Amino acid sequence: MRETLKLRLSRKIDEHRPRTERLLKEYGDVQIDGVTVAQVIGGMRGIKSLVTDISYLDPEEGIRYRGYTLDEVIQNLPKAKGAEMPYVEGLLYLLLTGDFPNEEEVMLVVEQFNKRRIVPRYVYNVIDSFPTSSHPMAIFSTAILTLNRESDFNREYHAGLKKEDYWEATYEDALNLLAKLPEIAAYIYNKLYRKGDPIQSDPKLDMGADFAHMMGIDKPYDDVSRLHFIIHSDHESGNVSAHTGHLVASSLSDIYLSISAMINGLAGPLHGLANQEVLRWLQDVMDKMDNKIPTEDEMKQFVWDTLNSGQVIPGFGHAVLRKTDPRYMLQREFSKKHLPDDPIFKYADLLYKVVPPILQEHGKAKNPWPNVDAQSGVIQWHYGVKDYDFYTVLFGIGRSIGICANIIWDRALGYPLERPKSVTTDMLEKMVGIKK
Image 1 (cartoon, rainbow, N blue to C red):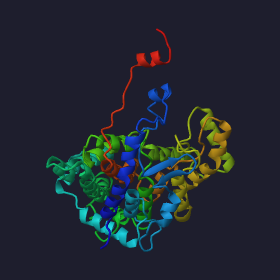
Image 2: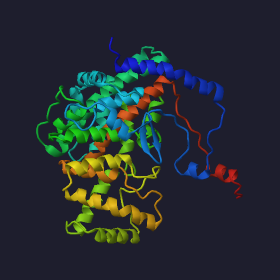
Image 3: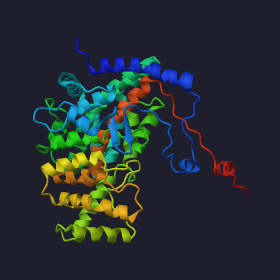
Image 4: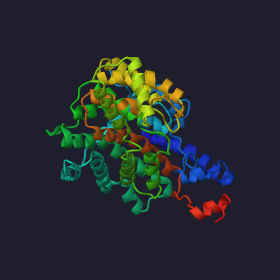
């Protein structure tokens, strides 16, 4: 009998549950972290208060999925014939089980996605009801929210689902949603920007290739999609989108409610909108230089002028990382191969060479290296996706994969309703000895 993803996941859950139970029973009172006033006021930054085995953001190595670097993930996940980038479905397998799937195991997941990809008619009606001036993230979030009526978890929960089986119905909801996201996103893109007849999904294609097909963009945009979804899929549990999905799901809201909430968090300018801000800034730089490729000295002078005027260089620096973002490097290598003569890439490449030493000399940046946003918009623009607002939808497709995997495991391990305790300013002042 072939072991499906769900069967392997079930076995992994049974093996993992005793570890969590022992930590709670035998070591629940052990203190592992302290909290400062700055952390309490400053958005809980850096407080160790969440658990996820799906990914870990190492300050020196970047994101690790199930302990593996991105390079190892790209190298070891199976790829479609002729493809440079792996199946996105294979990444879901890895995030859920911690194991690299073989070709047969990946194809079983691809088949599952193809069986679940059909979007109900009423979802299209909801999308069509939006004005064409609407932001695509608002439409994307609402379309996902509308699917709430399809939830297996809701039906089974109200029928008396056992707590230890919560994860199974959540798994079904997660696969049903993830399989539909590319078609929902492509339909939104068509409504807002392409204005033609939507391109129908092709059940013979994997997730990345089918999305490229529905976007009407030729190869290698299928590999662009695979890469984009993979590198954006997870980034620990503390960032706004991941934490929002985890928080909402902790109330036993279904996947659709939780991922819709996640999308809303991702839509904020301090989180998911950064890639479009970088591209907009790059194009502004090109305008100021009359679209001529500057010399390194000319670009250095421009960067210094920007910093000395009190502005920042977008796309450089990261709250946790202290090296060049591996997600950036993967996109850079792809760009060097497929779009080396693109003028915007040439500007991005030049900034990669000159900005870090300048930021180090400037002395105010903890991390002078480029992050993922410094390159992702450049690639999308090159392949004809030139509508900035849509970039965050692409981000949302990828991020949904990691958050769905996290929510499934949250349910499997019985994580409770999330409920941190707040204090008043008066209480904080008293704690630190400030007398009124």
